[in-house]
Amino acid sequence: MSGERDGTGARFERLVELIARLRGPGGCPWDREQTHDSLKPMTLEEAYEVVEAIDGSDDQLAGELGDLLLQVVFHSQIAREGSRFDIDTVIEHVTGKMVRRHPHVFGDETASSSEEVLKSWEEIKRSERGAGAESMLEPVSRGQPAVMEAFQLGTKVSRVGFDWPGVEGAVDKLREELGELRALSSGEPGGRAAEEIGDVLFAAVNVARLTGVDPESALKAANRKFRRRFAHVETRLREQGRSPSDSSLEEMEGLWAEAKSRGL
Image 1 (spheres, one colour):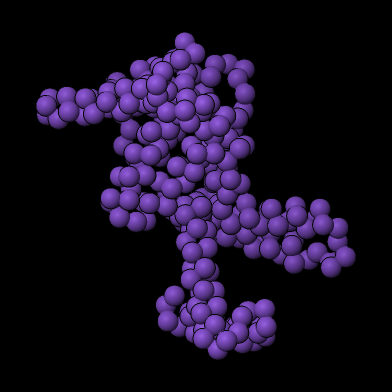
Image 2 (tube, rainbow, N blue to C red):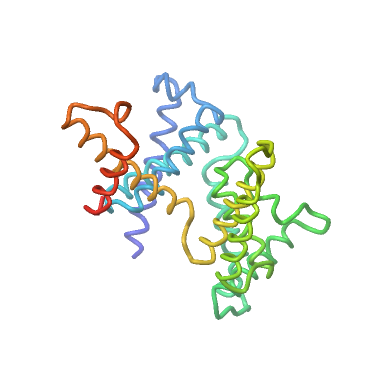
């Protein structure tokens, strides 16, 4: 076991040294030009690619996790060059946090269920923020996609008991919001419609959460299914020497039903 740790540590050190070399004198011009800001899009992209790779092969997931780890090391190297922090600081932060927030493993407390663990986690985070700190929802990033933000907001408050007792309550709320959207007259201003649609989407995210479904992944899967089925529509029309723009809705819906019947 010790040998395995040594091997892992050596490989990690090699990665840290590799990034330092790329950023150093005689290194790569592109790598040396990067900043925290310039890497933001790539960091976000790599995180999304990890999520997508979870539905793929082990080799894909390993590769994408490596790309995400590269971003962590890259950001740490940039900070190190500015004498702000380094990768050791990053590791110490996360290790210390995990020990503090698992007193049922590393301390004297007990937790017999995931619910108890999550409740304890929130209490520990509140104590870390101190008295008079900001809302418990403040750490939820406003910069992430809206579906993920809604999911995390609902998850956060559920840990302190602010939630429906079961999925049926969330489904009823979704029906209520759909009813309010349906009740809008066609002449309603766009702002009102946007608000009601937002409420519908927020309610749908909570239904997903209480069903144990990640709404972001579910929507991604639905997007992929839509792509497959519409690609079938385009292919079949192309075989007839046509395109969607010169076909009727009825024709396209018929081909869509064909794609669905084939399991696409």
